Length: 203
Image 1 (spheres, rainbow, N blue to C red):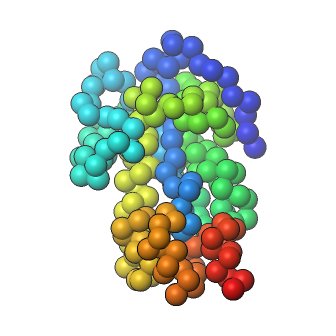
Image 2: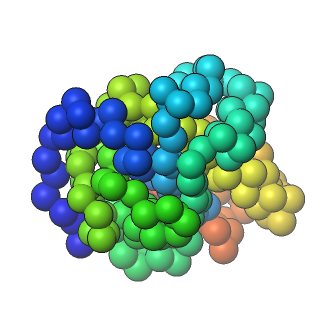
Image 3: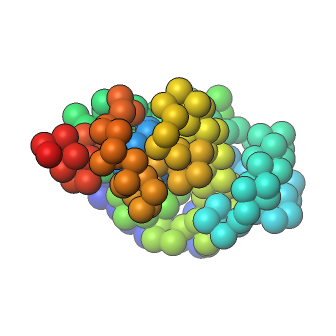
């Protein structure tokens, strides 16, 4: 369910009614994958400090999350659950989360600018932009919303499933996480289709 990507023109990137779309959580061993879609006009309503979520500190992301939600023309955050990741594979689950986010926008976008190389199939035109979270403000804004939403859920999952350190590593395959997996086994929110988790299950 992937649309063939096409590089957008500069005019399309600057389109004030284009939705920027990005994901958070493709690589972790546990938890859902999130996606956000944001329609933002930086010329009409600039929000200082928006950048790729990966280069921002957690406190900066939280502050920008609130500003984006307050000033964006439209935004939506969606996710694909662990069961969907294991059933579909992580790429298709990510595209599903993106499609859900775009579809949930209360304002129909003129086009969707997607960070990466794959596009979900949606009603509006889509364009894949490699490194889009560093080139397009709306995509960077989406990266922030998706990251903040996922981090909040991982904090909650840390409370529900203590011992794995979800609040610290957010489900990524750190040494601490892998050690906890070996000692505790997999939790209901671990992605059993991912090799490090599957290896624990067959030991």
